[in-house]
Amino acid sequence: MSIPDITLNDGRTIPQLGFGVYQVPPEDTKKAVTTALEVGYRHIDTAQMYGNEQGVGEAFAASGLAREDIFLTSKLNNGYHLPDDARRSFDATLKALSSDYVDLFLIHWPLPTRYNGDFVQTWKTLEEFYREGRARSIGVSNFTPHQLRRLHTETEIRPAVNQIEAHPYFTNDEVRAFGQEHQIAVEAWSPIAQGAVLGDPVIVTIAESLGKTPAQVVLRWHIQRGDIVFPKSTTPDRVRENFALFDFELSGADMGSITALDKGEKGRTGPNPETFDYVPS
Ligand code: NAD
Image (cartoon, rainbow, N blue to C red):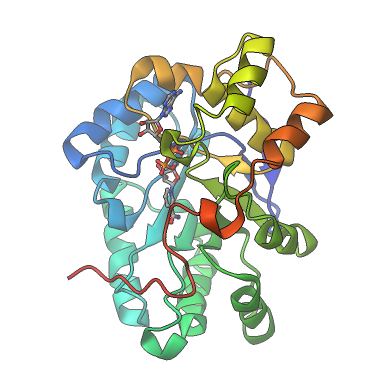
């Protein structure tokens, strides 16, 4: 099955469907990613904060795939926003991934209440990685429109993506619309809300009518919205299930019913990026 590519604003492409490894323990990561690569995933989303980049690198090395056949994303850890810290941690990311570049590197959280709110200097450090060719694309995660506007006016390179929480209970359409208007691709994290949306009667009914699973219906809804997704699972059957999204289509009416499940701010499962200030100790 071939996965569609999305073209980013820097001209590079990213597979619209990938595999996420948040909360996959380091010792299980090589196995989980190996399964995903065997199923056919070619886009892996990790982060310095997840502590499992090494396992991703080991799975890639063992796969026999050529480097250009896989798309690797990682993210700058909170607490490493100062330029020299970011440089050191980025070097460690490349080493852990056994690669001399990442396809996409993101600022994981804007941390507007730390570092005097200066995520702009952090972004300028990512611009360095981009110019050196060590990050083929650069982007952000959990940025709000006003934070993106600051980058727009104070820096040179526009983020290629903004990775944000989005799922049927938190459609996050205001931030998505800003991205669409400014050619910043949207990556939807926790696309099935870590399983919380899968028992919803609206989703279950649509799934039954199509002979698909609730997870497939929700992931397909994201795909038809045009967003990039990378569901996480360490269960091989689910890893396969989450990959089988391209042999059916949701009607306009089904798309609308799922979007109408939005609960606004109440549906958010993760932290609010305006106030989140966690840094690892
Ligand atoms: P997810 O929405 O992908 O849900 C994962 C959970 O759902 C699994 O642990 C499993 O319990 C369940 N599940 C998966 N497939 C299923 C299936 N087919 N049927 C039933 N249950 C199933 O949640 P996530 O892992 O939080 O998000 C996906 C990825 O997004 C992460 O792995 C990570 O790469 C990224 N992410 C990024 C941020 C960020 O701040 N940038 C935050 C959270 C997640």
